[in-house]
Length: 625
Image (cartoon, rainbow, N blue to C red; front, side, top):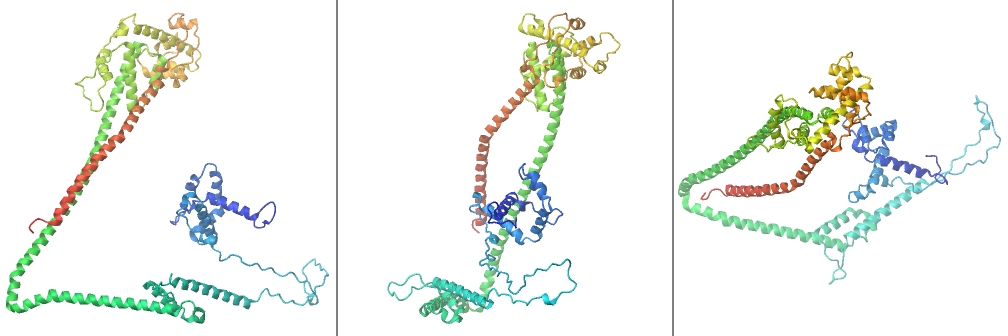
């Protein structure tokens, strides 16, 4: 880049260098934030610097930061920050920040860039080569000669002098003198008055003392310049400044004398009468009076001092002990809160675990009575691993759906039942009422309204659900026909490989022996699509499948599970309801915060007024002292 001709038509070397400079300044504008000047092994935080850049520049800048050139620049910045290259790059960054609109009021100076002390003001052109007296014969050597022929050496020419050095020094001295004279003239103009007097046009208006001191000091410092400064400050102006200084000194002397006179008058008025009365009373009366009055005065002063110190001590001790008491109370409250929170969480966890186990057992019993889909049961059991509160609410919602399916009315919450951790729930009250009823070995005896009738809508739905269960068992049999890992399924249900009708027995044992764990595992192995939905890829069953399962050649494939019954829909609806409750609480929080802040400000003002009254009474002291 240094060899490029700036006057060319295609490339301009200066513009290319400036473009590279702007590129580097843009990327390293904040590099000083990541310097490590503490003396550790790592001088520059590379990871933090690269992470602060955009995604497009990270790969390129990681290569630049790892280069030896950048490492050398960082070492120069830390150990030699005043180097010309470092100062130039830092001033270029400052100049870029100064051009930003956000830094209009806090711009910094770029002293290094703006320094023109090394600026080229004149160009010297060297003279052309002088070939006079040199032969035009060319000489060729195949090797360096062993000895030089002095006859070939021409006369030595005297070099041409570029300029007269003495003349240049004289010109420089003359220019410096002119510059100094112009500066002194400007300073002399500043020391002159701003206007003339209206009554005496030929005289100047008097200035203040500061002006007079500056004028006299300027005249004394430049007294050796001779005639060159004679016309800058006139003698009348200097005399005026000296007269101002003299009058100011006289005024100061008069003021000090008046102050001394006032002091003398006050001393004579206050001290002398007391001295005269003591002199007339005589030494004996003076001693007796002092002896009689001194104990009372000393005692009164000591009692006042003692009472004041005692009150200060009591107030200070009360303040210190009050602060300690408040700190201890806050600390004890925090410890109590942590302990109570831990105990409460443990009890809630235990209660929810026991409730979840009881809910699951009742859900299994009600599933068999309401003929819930086998696929839905397997998926519910597989995914029933949610956090405590979410899983608890999901189980309660499942119980509520089963109660509605069997026609079981919800009971009101028992007033006698009291639970510290949970609100009163109609679902829990209904669960408690059905718990002893379902624990009795009733077999297939109808217990609930949907089971007791045959013509109601609930009974019709139960009949359709029982037919769906048969069709799902047919699908299980069909899947076992084409399944490759049947030994694993037989092992889960402990069915021998040599037994007859193995597939039909497995299809009839799924969700019929009360074991939810084995049935859900077997169903998830047979139907992997249960991990995504409660609906499976059903196939058209054969007559053999209906005959082996024992439901007759009727029906077809089971209808798909409706979206409102699917587990994901119930979970999304539950989360949406909880989010709505939280959002309402957050929207109502600012009004409650404003009320509490108003109450705290009122209490703070009351405490401040009480503190002010107490402090005023303490300063004034008790009445009568």
